[in-house]
Image 1 (cartoon, rainbow, N blue to C red):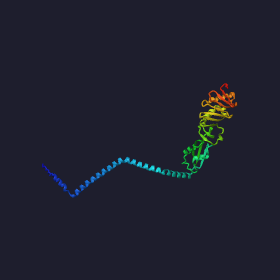
Image 2: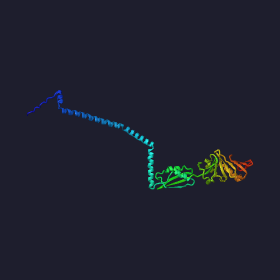
Image 3: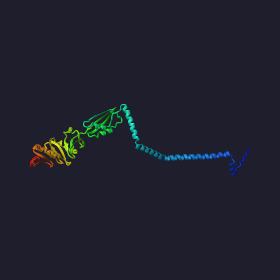
Image 4: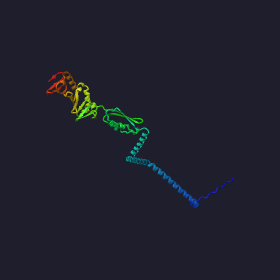
Length: 313
């Protein structure tokens, strides 16, 4: 068999290899330079895009904060300028006119429970005009204003579609006529003044006089309800020192009650009246301030001390 001999290739020296590379055609060398520059700029653009993305990711929270702060500042400036209120008023006016034109305006107001409340003051507190929008009418504010009136204890305001409002009142109940410095006023169970008008309509109420009498009137009425005979003879109850009462009877007799134990004192007076007809005597004053006894001051300036069951002079 014949063996083919392999032709050995001549190896190039380093210098020869560089020489061959250098002696490549100029167009080939130019393409190699363009390729290297193109690769550099691609890497530069890729790195730059990566840096921009990273910077954006780092700055995103700050950007949102600055944007929110800017929007808030702008809204605050608009609010301070009153532009929102103006826009709302114009919108409400336009809506009210539209609703009124389509049958939803206020054309009627009805009231129940009113007896002494002034009608003009009531409608002023309601603050509504014919043709106002029933839809936009604020019934809560209207109720609060009405309950500020002197005679009103409770109030309710209701829309009655399509064009009416109903007011229901619970008026305050006077329990006494209070006199202070010559002025007469009606007071309720809490001692609050109701009015100085309509006094003749409540002429049968108890008459209390003096500083602190209005606040103590409710307790006084409870006390006298347990002693109907004496209560029927009382024309006025005078508060003394904001702690006790003097009773002025229809006969002109003054009854001095103690600051404590008023019930026991009045019970003693009732017992002695039943036994000795005290009020038929010619007396000016009955003093009940000492427990278990009373002192009668006669018109002759004589003082009589009495206690149950006997009489001492």
